[in-house]
Each structure stands twice: as structure tokens, then as C-alpha cells.
Image 1 (cartoon, helix red, strand yellow):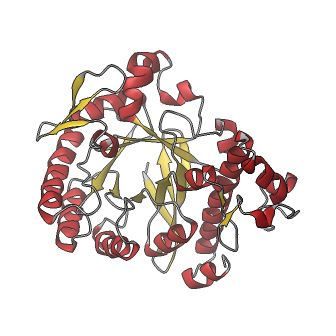
Image 2 (spheres, one colour):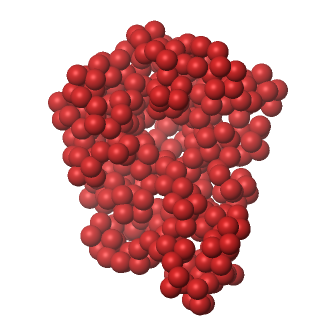
Image 3 (cartoon, one colour):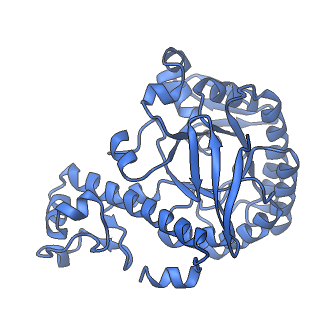
Length: 363
């Protein structure tokens, strides 16, 4: 069976099917982040109701808490979460290399301090694969070396080479035949390094490929330069994953360039800060202008929040620090995002998707 098939193209944009052990995922698609096995403030039932086909969890975090022994008893992460749709697991490279965890970085892997017991531990490409094999996600991600935004060319060069070496070791260590394995390209915003990493990872023959090390604080134009450099070098017949991107405008632009899947905390994180996505741009529900506003968050939205509650009511909840305000906004933003991607897919299959025209409908 083919692991990925392209059903329609419109310009560079593609609509396809990613075939996984838990069913088909229509591309392009967006994954909310369920780091510990849950999207913040939303039940799995609500995530499903939003139109979500797939979530992404963090293997590094989950192997510490609740631990692999617990998840083994449930025969994998899907059953532990009671989630029957698609599931990616990130290796956790971004987290393990943060100042909060990282003690030492070497060719072997990352020496980190376990935040739960304080012990120093090694996290290697082989560890990342063994953990994800046990978790049993539909798609496992390689362990990569993720330099911070603004890192020097010397540091990014080191990370690019290490990412390639770790990717090769990940492929060798990956043993779960029912699980797809995606490689991750690095290179930062340096064109030569982005090209080098993309070619190195592509040549290893993964089931899919991700552009990593972006959307971490670099200028937006630099991010798109890197995307435009990397995408043409990725195999057309395999899914292309842009990690960490989730604003409505960026999703539209990236899909128009040929990206197939995304993950980001952006919809739910901005919701927790009082921002709601609308077809006319984002609004800040904390603003006093919404105190008497009887309109829904977005008059074109069909989510249960917009069907049942006014801006004035959600403004009141947010101002009085009622947690339901953040919950309602989180659901709305996720529903809005999923509906946006669904509409784009429909237009691609009909041969009607045009980035500029689509963006005009969002103003």
C-alpha cells in the first residue's frame, strides 16, 4: 500500500492522503499539540469535534511521565489516550536542548536533567526511536539538533551535520514496522546549510520529511526564504511537514508553497491570552469594545461557541478570570483553523485555490 498519495494539485499546493495504521489522513492537515497526551483545556472529544484528524505528542516528556511501563500496559499511546485518529510523536529535540533540560550536547546524544527526579540522563537517537516504537504513534520523528533563533553560522553548521548523523542512526534503530518515520531538515536561515541539510535528509529515504528549526523567533521573511530554499529539494512524492507553524495567514501561504502538514501551539496559546481568530483578522476579547457586543466571535463560524455565546459573554468570562473563557476561545481557534485548512483542501481539489484571493476573504 502506498504511504502517501497526491490526489490533486493547484499551482504548488497539493491535496493528498497520508495512509497510517489508524486510517487515512487528508492533506493538508493541521495538528494541535498534545504534549502530555492532551491539548490544553480541551477534551479529546472536543478536539475530535473541531475536525482534527491528527494530534502530536511529545515522546521525550511522555517517557518520563507517565513512563513507558504505564503506556505499555495500555498497548500504546492511542489506547492510553483513547484516541482513535492519527497521532504523531515528536522526539522532543527542541525541549531536550532547552536550557531547562540540557546539561551537555555531544555526538552520542544529549545529557539532560530529568525535571521530575533531578537525575542526569542520556537521550540519544536510539533512545528516541526505542521510546517512540513503544508509544506506537502513527508517525515517529527523528531526533534532531535544534539551534536557537539567531544562532551563529558555526553553531548551525554543527547542528546540521549532527542532525544528519542522528537521522541515520534513527533510521537504523527504528523497528516498528507499523509506524512511519519522518526525517527533519535543519540549516537555520542560512541558504547553503538549509540546502545541505535538506539534501542529506532526503537521501536517507524517510517516509516523510519535515522542515525544522523555523518558527522559533526568526524574522518572518527569513522563515519563508528558508521554506522556499528547502521545499523544492524535498521528494515530491512524500509528505512535507512544516513544524511549529499555525497562524491562519502562515498556513495559507505555506500550503500554497506545497506544504502538506503542520503542528503548532499557536491557536490554543493565543486563545489563552484572549485572542480569537476571525474571518476579518484576530480580535482581543479582553478589549472593552466587546463589553456590550452581542455578535459571536466570528459571524461566519459554525463552532458551538459562536452558535451559543456572544462576544460580550466571553469578554465577561475573560475579564473575571473564569477558565471557561480560555476553553471557549481554545475550541473556537482550533475549529477555525481546521475549517480553514478543510476549505483550502476543497479549493485545491476543485482547482480553484489562489493564495492572494483566499487571503482577501480573511480581511
